[in-house]
Length: 215
Ligand code: SAM
Image (cartoon, rainbow, N blue to C red; front, side, top):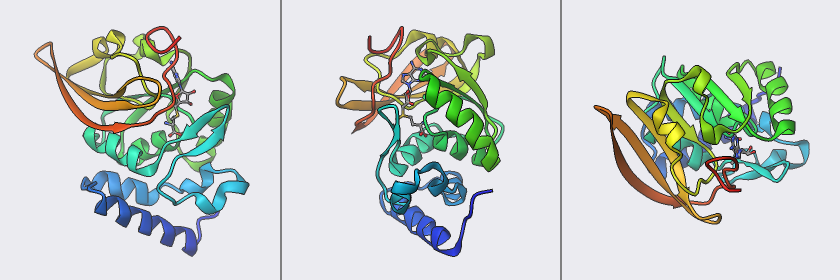
């Protein structure tokens, strides 16, 4: 079990306060971020930075997303307890842990074999048990579809049709779409079979690879 001391809890409370100031208001999201020991997802060398509102390297050229980005995507996804959620881009497992703290049933897929192996072994030791899958998440996870919510944590060139196909009625997809450097956050809601699209701020994610991602 990871140590979670007074100092780390204090830093986490400060982070939650900062996210509130930046406009995050969903109490389920703020409570979840207040619970997940983000420092446990960091290498010893970067430990002191765990509660900064920044993205950090996790190896394999990938990153653990900035807490604001995690909070923003989770809030816009309107996640609630009992939702069946697909996360594309497991990475460190931090976003999956936040979704689990909210009470969602989480399926998470990762395309990088080393990260998949590492996170699959590591986060259950912290008590976080999503269903792990290895493969190209740009195609979704047809064997387990449909999903109430889908969150893509890498930047896509287009909205993969496989993902909207795998949404339930009233299902929501949150996905950053743009070029390799900058993407606009899109929220797509399925209503009576139709897709409703909303646009939010710009973000900078690592690229979504694969069949319906970057080649
Ligand atoms: N959600 C992660 C976290 O909480 O640490 C951060 C994810 S990181 C910004 C993006 C991840 O997407 C990387 O781990 C990358 O390997 C993964 N990825 C890229 N293309 C993918 C694909 N087609 N399917 C699944 N994962 C993919």
